[in-house]
Image 1 (cartoon, rainbow, N blue to C red):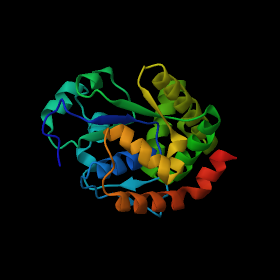
Image 2 (spheres, one colour):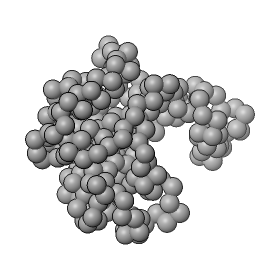
Image 3 (cartoon, rainbow, N blue to C red):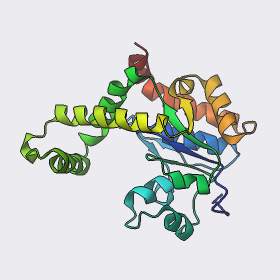
Image 4 (tube, one colour):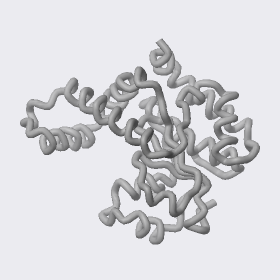
Length: 223
């Protein structure tokens, strides 16, 4: 079901990175009884795949040449009633009354950022080149001097700053640890959709698969 009224997003979820935001968006749509073709990429445990990705709010915000949020939203009508984004924009409030961000303890930051770098940036030549160029532009380092460890350090610093900015934005936090239990995940979905969950069997199956491929990572966070 596509969004029929651009002012009726049920929720927008903001998050730093990793699979958390895409997973939560997908199971929340299921909780509403909607279709979602979520697929967990087992060759890359950080990835959630779904067919309408290039119609998603997140993708269009990050790739559109016109960065006016109102223009992006007015020009596309295939958004889902729940969307997500890596970035918060105050204009979201013109289109949605329930905006959340995924929060986590400061002690989690380095583990989450390192995993994203190791599983995404370092295995994708395009992404690595992009982030290397970003560092060259920002700090004036020569490209050949950009090491994997420097990319990890940059992600740690950038993600910590971004998380702090979300904490100061006055939007509603979601404790990442709620996703580590099926029962608390269901309660979280019901908070997001403001209703009882539908399709619980499908949600449980997807949650179990997501948790299974991330179990070692989650254990590391909890150490």
